[in-house]
Image (cartoon, rainbow, N blue to C red; front, side):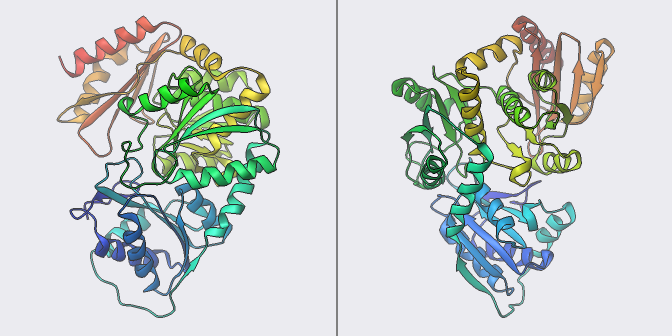
Length: 447
């Protein structure tokens, strides 16, 4: 059962995950949820068609009506699950993981994440073969993409004129981008798209689509500069995340993207709540305050962000890791809506992305996430607290340890899957404070 992670299923092919286990997981999902109909989609990986067939067989063997989207993005699976009134959805994807990985993302009716008890139930029942039931079927549901495109077009509103480089990374994004471009144009958008690595290709000839890694960004940076565009966008494999570059090719840090999206959404929904994680937050909180909104903290992770958003009726939720959630998109994450909203913000304000990003970088410098390998993450967290908390004006444990020293702050949190501590340091307008804060933490964690 090694591929079962905290939120989803992910593992190495032939070692952690194969078609037999995919079949059992799908059957277990049907038994735990009692689903009569389930939306199924897959990414562009070479192993995904066979795994998707195994999932369809596992669901069908429990009498489930399978609504198959074929090659699609995770957000299309979310949308279709709600739009078609299905009892659940399964996306076969390993997103940004290496090519020898694959996995599954599971949701219930309305694209709501499974509860901890449901996910544990799927894990337990996947260890055994299920008896076969009659009545299962598989139907082509790919036509739902038109409804998805219309919904996104209504949600983002007018866009452009703007010239954008879009790097699909040979993942699943290409066909959906084409459909969106056509649908947005019909709604009056003026988008000039320059396409890069656009065709789905599960061998990933230009590298695994994971723009969060700095070593994977130069292709997009160079293409942005060469094409003379206003903005660059790069997607991960199942395009539930997008990463932005300004017109000079400079990468936008995650917290600055969250701040811009908060600004865009609060302009349309004054006074609304915005949910964000506590890793790097001053840029977001200051932007939300200026826009008249309310900031709400949530632990990192889609299950937590979505739950807190629903509890507060938040219009938007953002993580610095590039997961962005929208109330009008089922409180689910999307990789297409964020860049379109920021393109719309640029159109309305007349400001370039480089101008907006440079102001955020100047006023809210940060360290980027720094990882430390430690033997006992909780022991180290408490050691850091003992050393630094007496000088802090505020302490918070929403997600790991956050300490606020007025002019700078830190967040130190344990990885969910590895013996790592993840550090983020930020300051108000003083990058030297960031550097000194990082140095102080290095002394404490790895003297």
